[in-house]
Length: 112
Image 1 (cartoon, helix red, strand yellow):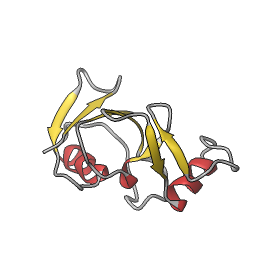
Image 2: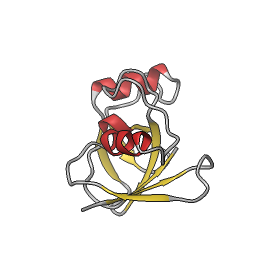
Image 3: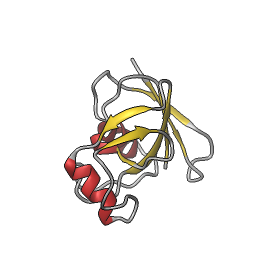
Image 4: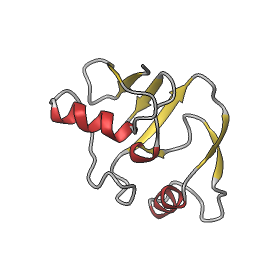
């Protein structure tokens, strides 16, 4: 099971939890927000509001990642990506992502 570690100045210390392979990161977030252990925002869970914005660090970076059209459009609307940006981007901590568009594959550090 992949370990997800949340890192933020909103937390007293990093929070590590287990997730299932293939589980969406937003579902891990929802579980922790409901439990009262994670002060992270999310609203729609469908990738249209942009509230679940995160930065990711994991083994295997950098590698290309294919953003969905919805995720790319939200990042453009938020001013975090140029309108001319391609759907394929280098997967790195500098690339903002939406937790509702990230599936767990491996140990992951989530910055918000």
